[in-house]
Image 1: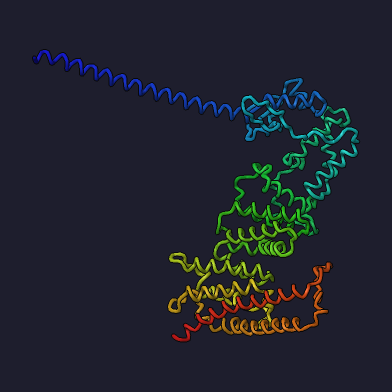
Image 2: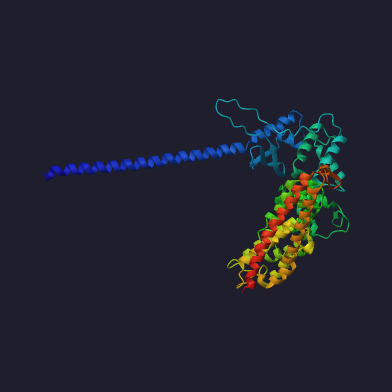
Amino acid sequence: MAKALFPRAWVKKSFYFQARISFVRVKYLFLTWLTVLVGSWVLYVQYSTYTELCRGHECKNAICDKYRKGIIDGSACSSLCDKETLYMGRCLSTLPNNQVYTGSWGDHDGIIRCKLGEVVHYELGEEPEPRRETPVFDKPTRGTSVEKFREMVFNHLKSKLGEQANLASLVSQILSVADGNRDGRVSLPEARSTWALLQMDENTLRVIGEALPALVSQPLMKRKQLPGFLEEEVRYPKESLASLAHLVFVHHLAADTFPSVFSPVFCLRFNMEHVFHLLSSTEESKIQKGLELYEKSLVRVEDGRLPAELLEIKTFLTVPQNLVKVMATCPRHDLRTKGLKVLKLSIDKFDTEAKYRFFQYMLKTSNHSGVEGYIIQNIKTQISIALQPGKSNIWFEGVQLLPLLRRVFSLPDGPETDLLQYLDRIMESMNVLRYLLIRDKVTENQTGIWTELYKIEDTFLKPLRVGLNMSRAHYEKELHNMKTKNKAKEKSIVSVSVGDETLPNMTTESQAQALHSALHTFDMMESVLVRIEELTEVKEHL
């Protein structure tokens, strides 16, 4: 019986072993198949991406097609298409419609660029749409004279670089380069090729023929006392250098030519002169350039890295004043909003001491209630940070803070201050005082607010109470007088002028709404003032 059982057990064990081996084989076969499938898919994606980004044959065909049709011309075109002595090398493209390759032309190495139409994706069964190409070779038109083309190039360079003493010589240099076959005249294809190259700002920068770092950083160098110009040789106007800095730092043209040792703070320093010049203009296009250049220069700097010593440089104080003018007077809402955004960004880049000194300067010089209110709001933020555990600093608490608080808690004209004109500043000042009285307990007095309270009452709270009562009485009287006037005289009683333009007269109803709005504002101010007065009574009962 035992002998009969042994073969059966052996057969069963052998079958189990073979089944296990088969399962392992199937498992590894499946993993191998899955690996091949995933690898093939990755290779396909990489290949399809490469073929979309790198279309060298299409790039060459597009250039040679325009060359043979007489649309463009030049020695480079003949070398690429006829002589085949210009070779396209490694693909550097990052966008499908902007092809970039390394190039070799005899002993010269360079970069070949060509713009193709957008890659059109379509589903199977659909007819592909024809490729759309950017018409960059349509100017100048047929029949344009050489003098007209010279004028086109001159105006183009003037719009890019501004007024320059050597602008005419630059135009002559470009026209000589445009004569690719050196036959003494500029043909229509050669002119179109040159014009298309000038549309790319990096080529415009190369026309200057000088090192960009030296040009852009000229404000830090010795300057000749000639209005509107920099450097001893008086070759480059401020406007030209400012436009050049905008091209480099905002549009990142030829930015790779800048030495890596140029720190963000150093770049900000020499750009401040350019920003000041652009923001000093009344032209909206220049103001926009100035805001963009200032923003791009600031974002490269880490928060809290600008020391207080930089405020000894004139432009670090005059540029914020220009920002105030932009925010207050610029007709375009987007530029006013951008100005506030850049001001906030600049504050974030200062260290603690620099913030303290900057706030003092702005409260003293801005003369704009909205800006002063924004600065006071930032002061409150810095005090709140200083009061947090482990974040104490000497500038926004204790003895150092008191001079700044005295400037915050003051009325420009005492009890006679126009409360509506200075509404933003006064409301933010009261909010800061209310916050300090609640947050900083009498027993702790970290900010020194309870020590300074008696002065604040004399210079701020009592004059504000008197001013509120006077303003309320005045507007209530005006409202009463308006209601008692003869209805025949109520149709148009107030005339308003902005600059040289007289606005439509205010009706009685509009004037009544304005008076009621002012009274509501006084009610709001008084409610905050009453709360502050309640908090100050705590000290009197101690």
